Image (tube, rainbow, N blue to C red; front, side, top):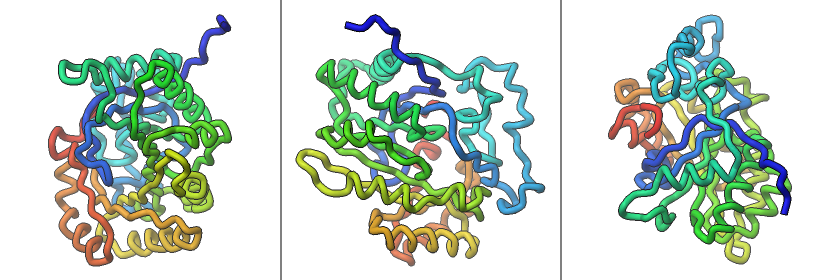
Length: 302
C-alpha cells in the first residue's frame, strides 16, 4: 500500500441544498464547487455585453482582504455571479484538500437525522468554476472511487459545465462503468449575453464528445444532458442562441433546451422573466426559473 500523500485540489465551497435549475429542479442535491474556470463572463448584467469598455465589475473593486470566507461575499449583479470561484483575487478564500477528504466533507455536509449520512435519493452536482477542467476531472474520479470503496455513492450525478473542456480518457473509462445516471448540464456562454468571444466559448465539437461517449444506453449506464441558455428578451441574443443550437443539432446533440432569464437576483430576473418565458415556450423550449433564488435569494451556499 502506497504512503504517498494524495494530491490536493482547490475548491470554493461544499453545500447541501436543492437543484434550482433545469431537469433536476427541486431534487435534494449535494454540491461541490471547484475553483478555476477558463471563462470569465464579465458581460453578464452589463448594459452592452458586447462592449467591454463599458463594463462595471464590482468583483474587481471589492476589498477581498476584509473577509475570510466566500459566504461573506455580496451578490454581484454585473459580471459572473460566482467570480469568486475562478478569480485569483479570491484564492485566499478557497479550500484545498485531497479527494478523500473532500468526499468526507461532502458526506458530512448532507448528513442529518433523516439520512444518517447515506446517499439514498440525494443527487450530486459538480459545478464551478468549471468542473470539467482536467484537474477537476481527475479529482472527481478519485472522489467517486473513494465513495465506491465505502459502498455508498450517489446514483445520479450532474456536471454543470460551459461545454468547452474535452473529457479525458480516464474520466470516460471510469464513468462508462458507473451504474447510475450521468448528466451533463451544458450552458454555452453567448457573446451577446456573457461577453465571451464565440471562438473561446462555443465548442459544439466538445459537447458532441460528451454526447457521443455517453448518450447511448450501455450496460447499466444511463446518461444524457441538457442545453441551458441564459438570455434576455433581446432578439440578437435569441438569434445567436438558435445558431448555436442548430450547430449542435447538426452534430446529433438532441438534448432538450432550457431557457433561464438573465439576472443575478430575483429582482433582476423579474424584470424580464415573463417576456423570456413567453419567447421560450412559443419556440417549444423549456423554461427554468432559478428556484433556489426565489426561496433563499442568490446567496453563497444554497
